[in-house]
Amino acid sequence: MVLKGVMTGKQKSLAGNILSSGNTFGLSDDRLSWLADRSSILKKAEYAYFVGCMNSYRYTETAARTFSLLQRFGATILPAEKCCGSPLMRMGFDAQKLVQENSRQIKEIGASTVITGCAGCHTTLKNSYSEDFEVKSVSEFLVEHLSELDLRKLDLSVSYHDPCHLGRHSRIYDQPRKLIEAVCNLEEMKTSRESARCCGGGGGVRYGYKDLSLRMAKRRLSEVPEGVDYIVTSCPLCIRNLRDAGAGEVKVIDLVDLLAMALPKESS
Image (cartoon, rainbow, N blue to C red):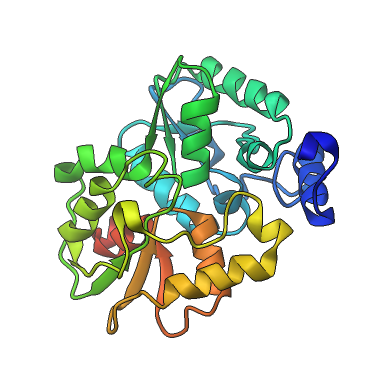
């Protein structure tokens, strides 16, 4: 449809922002403003954390907490990361310039594994980039190192929202749940795993059809069990859309933010 010029004005604007600035917001601001110590960017590393646009610019505390956790295992970040290209691809635009630039930096770092904190970035890097490196979500990586995290139990009950890109696309269901159950009580939503409803935040739907997107998010919120302390997910787009749809008294947080509560004070 896009190739034939069929798109909304907002979708066209989003594509222009990404291609001109390298991020979904069209910002010229420092993408690494969340990083206090630039010396922590290693020139060579086995693991590279791909932060993503949302966490780089909107959920910077989550970005910092995620990198702090991954640094324990020698991870670095791309010095000049660009948007992974997911929004462009989902809407039908060409994202090859972004793919090539990010791939060049990953190759220079020598990373054998790229770790993603965004579900959309995970799908894109795993399926639309080269096979020269392995792609893992944060939950996949951390569950492999669970015994090394020194997590404590929290007196909380949470519900987990499966992002479409991690769930349906990549079948990553057990890993985030294992991490959650290591620190607190998990209560499933009415629909979960393969049957989980989409929040409406991805695929360019929010940008092109915001009313539809928010209706989908509100429907998803209606499935949250009563009495839980948090809604936890692994996608910043899901977090934003569920919050904007009126999550109310139940706060929507990233999985890493939950884990940070369970870390020793000096580690979080």
